[in-house]
Image 1 (cartoon, rainbow, N blue to C red):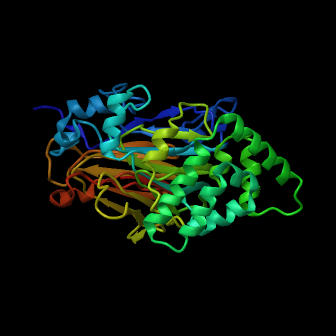
Image 2 (image 1 turned 90 degrees about the vertical axis):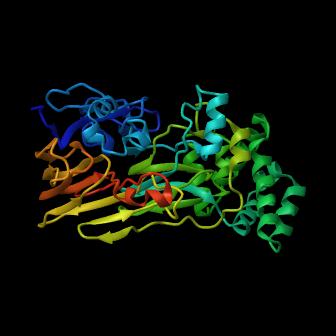
Length: 440
């Protein structure tokens, strides 16, 4: 008889050393800990990727498959991938990450599916995927970012308090913003779009001149508003960058550990500091326009943004379930994933069953994982894996799993909502973060 495929396998995730990451190994950041980086390493540890994306695929560490990339392992073992494999082309529909942010990421947005296909066809080097990239980020430490447009009256107040910004926008557009406050949503959106575009399309020398005047004025000020203190802080990272003026347009969001943000298509945002777990549709498409030395596509960013969606960012607390807290994208348009956070205490946690593979990462502590076919698939072998801080494990489709506590926090992506395929036309993943962290 053919050898059975294990119901779970250990993975080695891929590390990304982007410039904005936290420098140094050892205990310096979440990503450094998860990557088991040596203390002496001085490079920035920015992201840890868990999934099948070809840019940085995870590698299987299981005996007999060791060294094989996860996507190839899934294609060779259809029983592990499950009956829905054809939907994803043999790949996972989600990409699961750890992030450690030391300096601001670019002012950016992610395209919807229609725009993603157009950008990919037009410029494959800068837009490598034809898929959208909705994201959900859950804070592991205190986490800070810019997310979505402020309410227009708040932006108008900022413009009135910042003469250099007012100069870039122009008097006519300022008057348009002020007069639109009492009008309908479409009028306010048009005024916001015009103002934001005036700033982003200003010549670089003019932006730097006004930014220099602003920074000098703020440094000599006796009392600063919170938004102005943030401008000075980010100016230390990106001196006189056009993104400094974006801060007056975008919500400044602070998350406590366990709180989350959903970042849908066409939403301007930028992470500023802290550690988080992040799960998204499988894509690496980013449209950038500030706080970055990378390729900028200002015209595309300005044209794609949703200017009608403004106001405070919605902070997610998650839905409490037995042994975990689950975070799901709103509505039914993003069924590829959701995220869950698991804090293990003295009781075992049942991770349930799934019709597609899940990934689990232990962020802190240790536990015992048991995965078995539960009688649903005789080709899967019962698998027991001791997990500890930085362990990453992929669970087969059609297997049930449980975690026995040893103390810890775990994160896992999950596909339990595939039962609603007739409703949403795709799959759902859950990510779990414990004192073990996991995603499924």
